Image 1 (cartoon, rainbow, N blue to C red):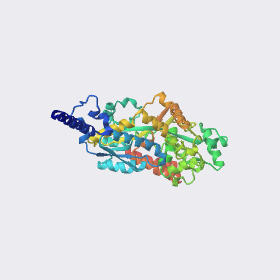
Image 2 (image 1 turned 135 degrees about the vertical axis):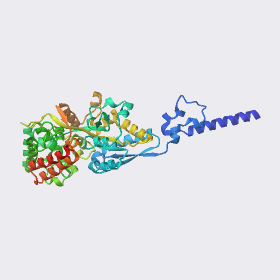
Image 3 (image 1 turned 90 degrees about the vertical axis):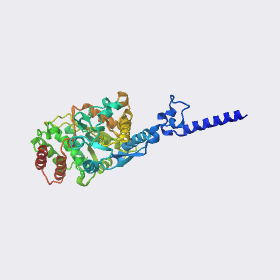
Image 4 (image 1 turned 45 degrees about the vertical axis):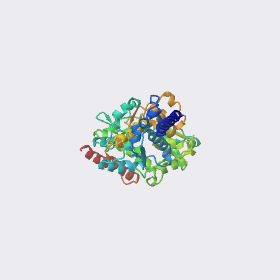
Length: 464
């Protein structure tokens, strides 16, 4: 009898030990716990069955600066939230602290100040080019991502998109996707006024004149922030002048050359002709979309990312099925490449070079969860963002949105592409273009004065 009692006590003690081992697991990470592994010994003590790293990692935070704020960015924000959720589930102890701010504030105010002080967020929205990513890389502020891409096995899965993020053969930023700039037009208004799609220069000008005569603004425009009209200016300059924009920093292309001044003069003529929204200097970028969506304007020059605004449930859902997209037509007798498009893979994420071991694990998880086929396809389908990674024909076949299809067709037909000049120009030069453009729109500067003023700043910067 005494022997039976001892056996029972021994069994109870053994079962208690096994229950303690099971209870010590992190239920959110069972796959990584030795206790969940087939190779784990069922008789191992509780202290050996739980993952040592999960027991010892203290909670930590990783700051993440993004620009996906407001209703127009809700699809992109949803993708970011999913990536954060997956990464927090993968990396023990991590909590991402999201800081969403307006694009220009991040790019031109907060991030430069943080970089100068040496305390940028651990993950942040980053533009490529000399004025942003490459400058920060030279200062040692950015994490070299080359070995991480090799470790994750995804370097070769990207398209040729690293040019604005590469310094001395090392990659310092990952473009989330791309865009192309062109003309959105209201197909309903065009059909009602017997107008052809604006695929030729004659059709574009004819449409602008006809719409104006009917009391409809030809082009919605919001020039309160000068980068908005600068999109169209950049494409016009590219139509007029060969070698733009790269040639501006080599001196081969001058802002006050006859070609560039010709493009600026054409833009000023459009302003004088009433082709743009009245009072555009007081109109925001969102106002521009709202005017177009309300039928107050027949056309709008914008980036392909705007295609997401016309989807069901989006900010301009009333325009679903009523929008077309074309490249700015070829300009007769102009010297530039008329098949070239302003297409950019210049916006994405950068990462601080100041990371501890746990933060580095979180960064790797973030990259793995964001830069993959699933998220790239979601970006294209839900937000109209052109993928920066290679997608299969099977994935591309899932695109059903007619506007996104037209964007892809426009990109396919392009003879070449060039980046928006703010990725090439030094920051003081770009700032001067914005100042002079708003003066030109207000009638306070001529095209020649615009060109002379910017060229003066350009020469100072090129001499540095």
